[in-house]
Image (cartoon, rainbow, N blue to C red; front, side, top):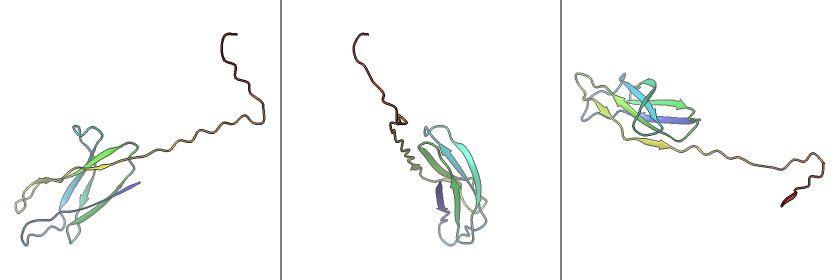
Length: 102
């Protein structure tokens, strides 16, 4: 599970509350897929949770408003690690492995 937090920080004293930002993800950095739309709180912050299965890049896109210009956040990369353990299991039987011609 990946918890993502972001904040819309407008210049000067402009209000950043109740703004919609689009969370997007990409595995190749070229094609972006929508994850969800987030609504900022009174301080301009928003949070989302995602479950990436592979290394994934995220970004936020704000479409703009009459009082605030459109913007795209820097890309954040999340690395997913998978651990695989191999354990021999002969269930008590003896196994013989032969090398060479038969």
